[in-house]
Amino acid sequence: MKQVPIVENVLKLNDEVAAMNRRDLEAAGVFTIDLIGSPGCGKTALLEATLEAMRGELAIGVLVGDLATTRDGDRLAAHCDDVVQINNGRSCHLESHQVRSAMSKIPLEKLDILVIENVGNLICPVGFDLGQDVKVGMFSVSEGDDKPAKHPHLVAAAELIVLNKTDLLPYVRFDRDVFTRDVKRINPGVELIEVSVQNGQIDPWLCWLRKKAKR
Amino acid sequence: MHEQSIVIALLEQVRRHTPDGATLRKVKVRAGAMRAIEPELMRWAWAAGTKDTAMQGAALELTIEPYQLTCPKCGRRWKSEALFERCSCGCDDATPGGDDALTLTAIEIDEMPPEVRPEVRDERSVLEERAAT
Image 1 (tube, each protein chain N blue to C red):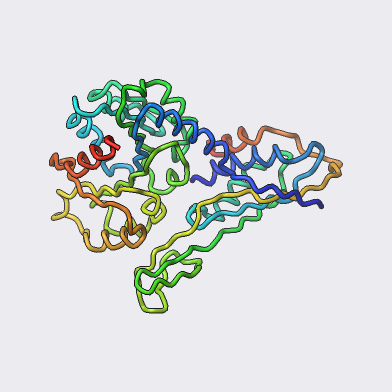
Image 2: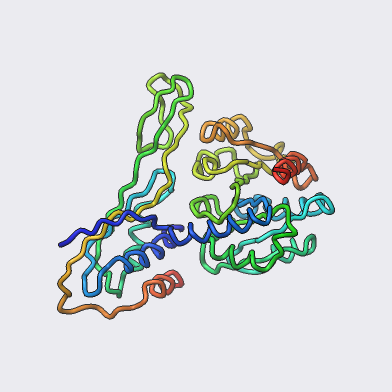
């Protein structure tokens, strides 16, 4: 038996394509977000409201990943021309080559911000570089206050955590202090904002986007 | 299950590094604690991906690095298999960390070809076929 030493990144191919994506997005002056959250936490609803609120102010494009259907893509396309639906079959996350293919279908040079709405999943998307500037983790109060502690890798990788559905706080068991403490414990430097897309209360998110688009 | 995607990438990588005519016996992979690898799922995906291929029977040796915990109160740093652990100073808020590297570190091969070799099939198609059933 012979041992052959190698020492090579297993995700080398994904990371190399992600680096190409990042280079092209930076050259076009686009701030790129990888938005990660559970199915049903309100990612698409937040983006719908964002596209309406930012109309005429910031040019936003969206790549949206789902295993099947164009339902999210259709919803978003009602608010924005630059939307690409990615259907990735059986996979639980997007990979950089899928993003690269979708990127080629929208005019990057016209955009200020590109949001990649990842497949609804708190685990698998975290470890795959897509070429984004930042990862944003999204939770909702109806999922429970324990989700950051149960999914710490997303919190650790995120620059921003968005807590949605705060309008449901009177009706569900959710301790803000527990949620906040766990988030800050896992990632002391992460920014945490609360929104209620249902009630149109997304100003903290819009402020964060404006700040990032002006970098 | 991101382990399946990782194994698909690993299969291609290992195939590239395995000399023609050699039989793969073992693959050694090191994963940082923050990579969130579940060893059992990784081994399942490896077994499924290599079945009916020239790599069938090769072992996957997976080393998961421990978390690096940092206490925000006393500054102590230590390594642990646990993501959340109380510091010796009594603080319960230690911050978990560690790297997220995923590295193929080595392969072990027999350079003599086996007398009977299974039919060689494309690893990606085999894994996708299994995932569909």
